[in-house]
Every structure is written in C-alpha cells, then in structure tokens.
Image 1 (cartoon, rainbow, N blue to C red):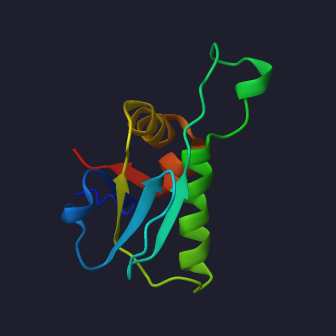
Image 2: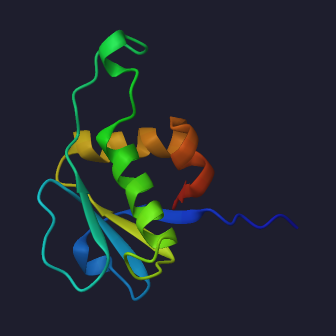
Length: 111
C-alpha cells in the first residue's frame, strides 16, 4: 500500500478552514490566527517563453509556506487551503501543483 506523504492542497472558501490548516490567499492576506501567505497570479504567455520560465507566484508562495513550517517560523500545518479570488488564481495554483517540480513533490491537490 502506497501512502502519499505530500501536503494536501484544497482550493476553496475561508469557511472550509480546519484546525491544522495553513491558508494561501490570492491577493492581500487577511488577518487570521492560522499560518497564512499570499500570492498574486501572473498572466502567462506561450509556454516556455523567456519571461515565463521562472516559477509562478503561487509556486513561490507554497514553497515559502513549506520553508516557514520547516524552520519553525509558523505553526505546523497538515493541509493548505487556497482562497482564490479569481479563475486565474485558481488556475495558477492548479498549474503549480501539477507542473512545478518543488510544489508537485511536496504538495498534492485534493480532489
């Protein structure tokens, strides 16, 4: 039996937050007692173009959450709840979960 040890990521609403979650907000982070971070989606050009080869803001934000947890800067979390304010934000998080090498190794989408 294979166990998936990656941190689950759920895209949803703030009222779906549970104890042990970290929050990732699209846009300005809101005040919360849970560990939180933020990102702003970027418009992508054609895949592989020079200006878009770098990692997305969502990928960088998820990686920063993981680093902060590992360094003890924020409380340990068992899941990340992404509060996306737009379809672009939701798409960017999904793309990071599927295609970013660091994010896809450490996080998994909740279906």
